[in-house]
Amino acid sequence: MSSQLSPAVVLDPETGLDLREVAVRPAGPGEVEIEVRAAGVCHSDLHVVSGDWPADRPLVLGHEAAGVVTRVGPGVTSVRPGDHAVLSWFAPCRRCRRCVAGQAWLCTGTKAVANTLPDGTTPFTGTDGAPVWPYLGLGAFTGRLTVPESAVVRVPEELPFGIGALLGCSVTTGVGAVVNTAGVRPGESAVVIGTGGVGLSVVMGLRLVGADPIVAVDLSAERLAVARRFGATHTLDGAHDDVAAWCQEQLGGVDYAFEAIGSPRVIETLPRMLTSGGAAVLVGMAATGATGSFDLFDLADQGKRILGCNYGSSVGEIDIPKLARLYLSGRLPLDELVGRRRPLSEAAEAFDDLRSNTGVRTILEP
Ligand SMILES: NC(=O)c1ccc[n+]([C@@H]2O[C@H](COP(=O)([O-])OP(=O)(O)OC[C@H]3O[C@@H](n4cnc5c(N)ncnc54)[C@H](O)[C@@H]3O)[C@@H](O)[C@H]2O)c1
Ligand SMILES: [Zn+2]
Ligand SMILES: [Zn+2]
Image (cartoon, rainbow, N blue to C red; front, top):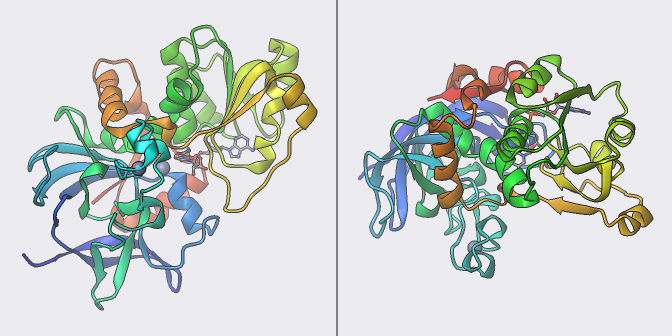
């Protein structure tokens, strides 16, 4: 079968961001072809565009997406053509020690973070015949994809594609940070700093488990208003309020402090927000090589913990359908997380939405 051409949002280290035609090769053994219907624009795409995470090869961006299975390669058993699917950006190898232990989010064998398929190849080729690589093994800002079976999670057909897209990254990460990484229990207190797509999902997760109080911090009044509707009991302005002092004075310190920005300066302040035995949860991803410092005596003396959080410590096949069911039964207000919808040709404007905190999560529709 011949490859098909589709427009794709490509970040090229030589020429920057543009929309160009790419061919995608058909599914081989263990692979699945997807028609993308919706793709969220996550700050992890922006980290690459802005150079926080340098890329040395042309990449099709996009890693938060949902669509329809159009064809499966030999040996694929978990999905078939016509199935609706959410894509997972951390396609686990299913063979390493972590995968075997049920901790797919810690997979050491995945090639997704190297921006390739599991065999080290790419399914995309430019019109000049040169390879174009899939960001996080997906490259979802285009109409058609070929991905490994382990990146595909079947979801109910009644789940809207825009919501499914958000389950591909921000929601699974944010709710998972609460439920899986931190294991927050009813009545425990939390602060969430940065209420974009990921931080608002943390707020939603905190309400879901009955945390109280839930303190949301951002620079954007609009985002904080959404955070209140999602369950925040208090909101603070990150530009003016001393969040750590407020947490100590008002609450005697919080049980959990979630950071969903990726700012070393903010991350360094998390332990000072905590009560003894509390945990800082690092959900935001800092620039490559960023470091930070903490009061080491305080950490040891007060038994405070620092928890890294990749993909909300989630197992895609288990957690994504679970979150889809919670949305469909009205337990997660995800409709309000979907912001502006734009065609692929407006990818640059979509990144501007993210930079300027306009709306909530912008969705690209191929
Ligand atoms: N751990 C993971 O697996 C994972 C998954 C997805 C995204 N991420 C990371 O999470 C972070 C957030 O992603 P997002 O898509 O929600 O980004 P976003 O841009 O939508 O949201 C970031 C929010 O932080 C706010 N902010 C910025 N500086 C602030 C400050 N000093 N004080 C208070 N608020 C501040 C902004 O106003 C914005 O609302 C990124 O670093 C992203 O790469 C991590
Ligand atoms: Zn993401
Ligand atoms: Zn693995």
